[in-house]
Image (cartoon, rainbow, N blue to C red; front, side, top):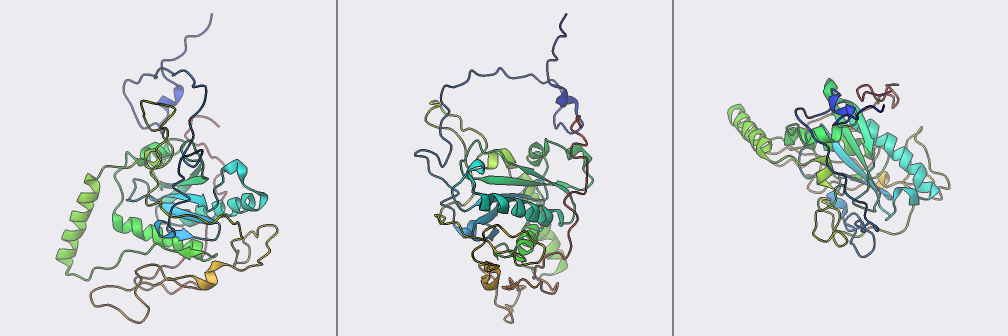
Length: 335
């Protein structure tokens, strides 16, 4: 006699599952004979290829890193994209090797932030044909958020403050710039005000952020099919914020300026990188010319960290080991 299958899967009983109460499994739709094209396939425009560099927090010759357009519930949510219009399985050996280096580097940068315990790395790609990897930071001590439902929790948790969000973005961008490329994220400027008015403004900003609708990791970009009366005509939602400028077709190497970083095979340019000529982030006040009432900040063109003065972002000197936890599925209910 066969056992009667449960009405809902066992994972609904995991401590990390975000919902409770009566749940019902949806009826599975019939498969379609031909899947509609993703963004960047067929005649559909690729928003990643059209995105300008200033829509990203860090850019290099072959890779770019972008964030959401507003603070998220998690301490950090970032997306790593290739400049060249390729999907994961289409990467040549050079870019495939660099993808590993960039994944480790970005994971370390995010994990160096205060209050981050783990960084989950995900790749879906049902909405866009352009390679994009998701990096989701789990808050330290929030054991209920461990496991595979972290992306769901992001849209449930209240967003972090905008000041903290911008500071985190600037720190990650500065970390990546230590190895090359150009940081474009700036820390929030200090508002020189009386303490009473400063507290009132901060409280008002936090209240406004809490009232804003949360943007799910899945809903915020190219991961969920777009509902349409004609399934063959309209498919996925790709809400990549600010994506509007062409990307180069050529593939050339990002330099690994620091010792110990993995150098891609067949590097014809040696260690040359963009770090030697890194531009100041847009809007930064030139060093030595402070503006009354504001704090100045500058991005360093070289790979040397700057002193930790107000308004200046420096990359952390050390990072914990990437493999610091042998148990990857502590709360998934499976080992």
